[in-house]
Image (cartoon, rainbow, N blue to C red; front, side):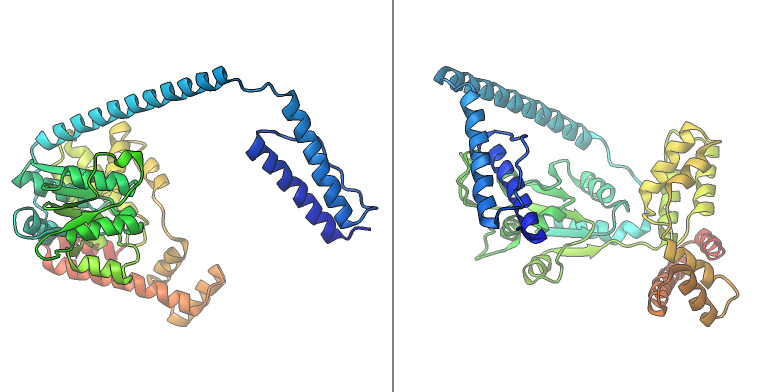
Length: 406
């Protein structure tokens, strides 16, 4: 007699054997394979293997044999499909190059944003100066790409753009093809997460005996025509939201060979920059601009999730579409962290700290420590807002007062 555990093992064996037939022989066995509970575990194993084999052999026997001409036809079809793919890739690449060329030709946007000044000059220290690389980090949607592109375009149109890391080989090809150029690398987290990508980047930054050597050994046909190593004389401007594995020795060593800077704004600063951009934005009426500012003031605060310049762009889509519905559409797309919302409301209530903690625990089931962690984070953001209000023009003080009253 079989135990329940043995019966389960045999069921798994049947499933595994069927999958193997499908993957290795292209044979799908739909016929149920029975387990005989009156027989032993070992006897069932033999019966299952034999039943699967018999069914597989039967199906293969009935399958038409592949003739040499059929194989040749299949190869031709495969080659045609590959040629089509290559043609499509070439077309896409040509369109991409045309788009980048047109984009480079457009004049830079002249938006003077005080918060960008430090990062701007650090980019220029590489683009115009003697630096080999500048690394700008900061949360998504706060204008890193906008800043880098407009800063570079103001001094040169002779630069290359690389967005989104794919494979080490494609990155190696790109670096080799532009080995003496100024390169803007956007969204480079993928490089930091890939050991081979990191090795290539190190080569572009490491100065060994006065030369930066990048090497890459590959057996791929796609590497044909590429040297296994070359000297990189270009410059890199790198942008990313966050450097992964920042405490890793190799990553921190790489960062130390760049001019690195974190672009970080308080909620108040983000609003001020948004309004600066909004005031100079073309194609909007004064009424639309006023409405955008009113809705941002009314419906966003320190606990609004993912509050950045893309928030403004989304709001403007709604206002252009229908100014009457804009508020409803905007509020339906912004989110706030539930725990932070509770702590925020408790901080702005008349309750004492012990009562705040008790209410937080009652509503969330979470402990005192979590309450204090969230509270400290919010206080840190509030302090950042207060500091930014002290160094900004008078109109920003009004923004800060409005922020504190929400």
